[in-house]
Length: 152
Length: 200
Image 1 (tube, chains in turn blue, yellow):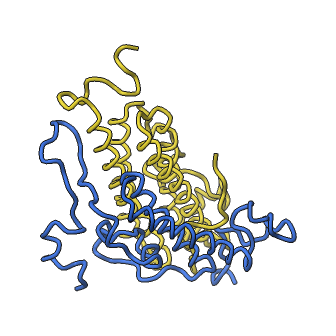
Image 2 (spheres, helix red, strand yellow):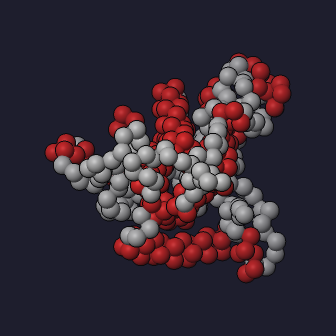
Image 3 (cartoon, one colour):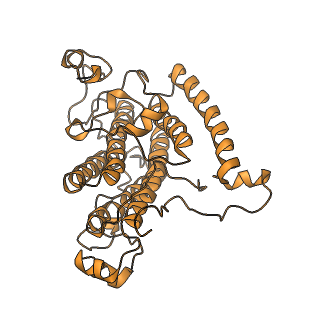
């Protein structure tokens, strides 16, 4: 059993629980508010688990992914995903300065990651063609294509 | 506006074709609880929202759903590549194949085409956000069922990612609903629709 499944930790109001108003009008729905953008998974683990936040990681039958398929975009996907998931948190917690500073750091990493990737494999966004020698936008494989094992 | 990024949100790399599984998974492309409905629902509900926070949440989650639509399309595409007519008949993919070959068409697993009647835009923030929370749960339940029916590890890896996103989105819609409701008249939150005030 890992620390995230420890029942003694789930029982207290920790990162797996959130706050609700003590007194609220009747006949309205409410969801406990996430209290903090911490703890957070590292970007690679966040992508694999489908969330940056261990408190929201609630898998069917507690069966989890331990890795994602190996693709050239993996590193960039992980950074972009962590940034995106944190931005959804910021949408409902815009005053969280710590989360915003982390978001800015992730965006910087994402920009660098996209430049690194595009130099090796071609543009992710058309704006990157400004620095390229030819119109490489059309060059495959496109993101949904995988021509591995089957049929070959 | 929207600008395309030439990458998936999460890698889809399916080693083995499986048209039987493709017939099931296509429901999350164009079925009643699928990603097409999710994206169109959220991106359409935005226009009449009374708060900037809800506009942002719907824009960002609706945009992510377009990425999920692409991932589910990639799953269906890869599960049906390089099939022979014999394999298509053997796996019961012929009823789909006759109209769509191996194209990806938005339909439910039972063959019903995508229908805007599976979503709503009420123009009422409480009704819309409550629908959105239900939609995330319905999609989560469908991904649960796909995991129960599929024994392909490559497919299940992607499905677990998509399923987890439903849980996260449910949380964010719930938080947005809290914020909206706290701004309403606490003695009667249904006194009026803030998108269409009483004195108009």
